[in-house]
Amino acid sequence: MSPGNSSPFDWQRFDRDHLWHPYTSMLEPLPVFAVVAASGVELELADGRRLVDGMSSWWAAIHGYNVPELNAALSTQAQRMSHVMFGGLAHQPAAELGRRLVAMTAEPLQYLFLADSGSVAVEVAIKMALQYWFAQGKQEKQRLLTVRGGYHGDTFGAMAVCDPVNGMHGLFHGVLPQHLFAPVPGCADDAVWDESHIAEFAQLLRAHRHEVAAVILEPLVQGAGGMRFYCPDYLRRVRALCDECDVLLILDEIATGFGRTGTLFAYEQAGIVPDILTLGKALTGGTLTLAATLTTERVARGIGADGSGVLMHGPTFMGNPLACAVANASIDLLLASPWQQRVAAIEAQLRRELAPCREFSCVREVRVKGAIGVIELTEAVDMRWVQPRLVELGVWIRPFGKLLYVMPPFVIEGVQLSRLTAAMGQVVAEIAAR
Ligand SMILES: *Cc1c(COP(=O)(O)O)cnc(C)c1O
Image 1 (cartoon, protein in one colour):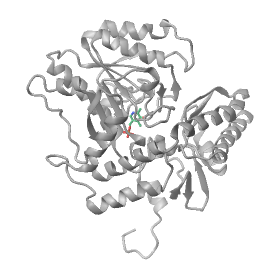
Image 2: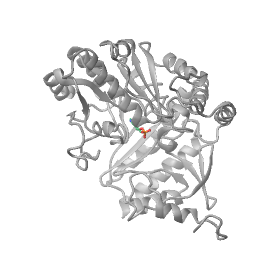
Image 3: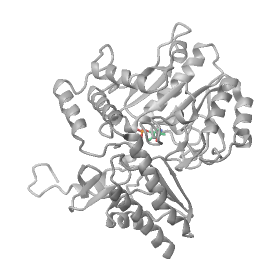
Image 4: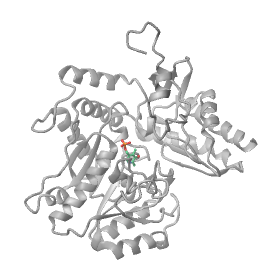
């Protein structure tokens, strides 16, 4: 099939035969659905069907799709400059974004690195922590401590702190650095605090404090590692233990940032401040890839303390002006919107409409936090059946493993959200009857 060939290009076939999708095999590709447009909270398929989007394209499209304000920011910036290198050059969109992020996060977070994807922002966070201790003359502080059930990205540094069982550690054994893993935070979202919840974590951190550079965690919500929620008291204790043991705290808010859990950032609910914070996903409202790693004066200046200290990172597309411009527009749009009420309304409706699913024997748990609704089943779903079935029901929901879950755009209307919950209920009923 050469270009210029008169037969039309069968792009869907080419896709199936040549393109990897996330976590797929070239030998047994899973069915994919051809999408041709997206606007509001709907995706339009090539066959004309319209699906209500329950995923926000993996936490990102908080304003929905084809948003006039974001499109305008993109085209205005594209006419000035889409990209220039950040080495030796500075531009207003990046500084504007820095100003916004510094203003909207906790006061001590004053310095930032603009990376090109979430995984890279995590790599930068890890580098900041290691370089900080190197510069203090504490070369032995090179390990990270985290909890099981986490997800921090697919690059090697990030992968090494993902859950060791479902995070591909077996496959890459011998290649990944060996970090320390405490149990999954055991305290439910609304549980009464008990010190036993943090006992193993505390023991592990105290025993290894001399070699631990940082603790890295997703605050309150473990996303792609299992869609689990845990209580703010746990985070408060983690902060205190990090201080006690002279260890930095990295919070990865790539999924939770920008309002998803009901506060702009999840750490606010625990009343703590991390030493290093990673952001991504919803940063550009889901339009372009961009991420940020923020840190405090102590860490930023500490990296240079031994006189040699430059932060050793600098991707080609760092601080991309187009991405920064649309991130600025997305943040402005978010802050000018009644996002708290929207997230609270989504939360209340998800609680109400998903609760009946608890009655099915195939359901282990139904849980809701902010604009996130999760049905955990007793067994993994059969994707070859469930994905087309959900599309038939008019929704875009992408389950994984035992999890059927939604995190819709904040602008979703009540009736559209009901279509998502009805489809989830329908699929659960059908699984129970199989
Ligand atoms: C998605 C995610 C990442 C990785 O971001 P990418 O942009 O996919 O590289 C890291 N941490 C968390 C918590 C995430 O949800």
